[in-house]
Figure 1 (cartoon, rainbow, N blue to C red):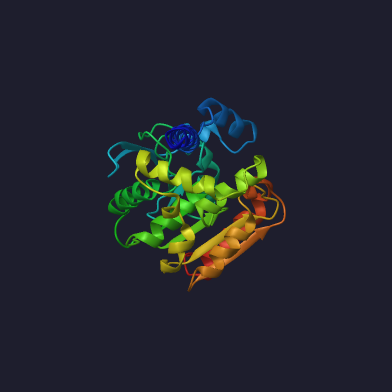
Figure 2 (cartoon, rainbow, N blue to C red):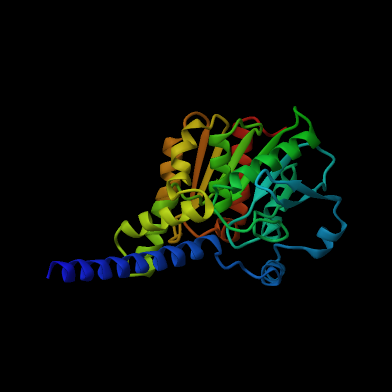
Length: 308
């Protein structure tokens, strides 16, 4: 009888372990290999919306840059130089997008007197990299981009970063983790904590309510990609950022909730500014409010002494 109980217990344990393993692998596959938008789709979308001008892009002075990531692959960047100035902004796109999505911000900063550097995050566009890590490895890549740009424009030239969605979270993770050699940051709809963001998506789109799923996914993520979900938390490092930060979000955003930006704004010490737009879904604050968006950036730059 005892042997039979042990046998049944062993079978149940094996089944449970197998199911747990299957869940862990499937869950981490969804994160690590998140389906990217097709490059042609992004380009066509931006052209139709008149946010990408082929003629301007083909004729503007620019340099292609290939930057070695400390993570072991090449990052593709384009240094756009429509103006005779050293003032530069690095633009970080969101997850599933690519550098073409950053052109609309490059044109905005051109109007405000800045050149810009657009680039593809790891595993996106023309850059290398096997997985998406939602800011963990991307922040290391961003540091490499920053150093390469700083070397080109000089130590005294004004340098800022603009990030959208995952790009915004990556910007905060970079600025709050490493010695920051930039002058300001503009972050549009960042998540404050990746674990909470995943849980929000799960509760919104699936019957899953427990945090147990996150703990399992985090264990497998550590085994498969070298980090845990807890290590992707802008909230934990935003207090380390000494440079001015402009936080932007849309109140209609139901993907990354606006309270996350409000939380980050509250945790940031020193110079900062917050703008919450009433109109706009996720990462569409600029698309829906272009004039007000530009005025907000202009006000931020003027308030903290980054305008001539």
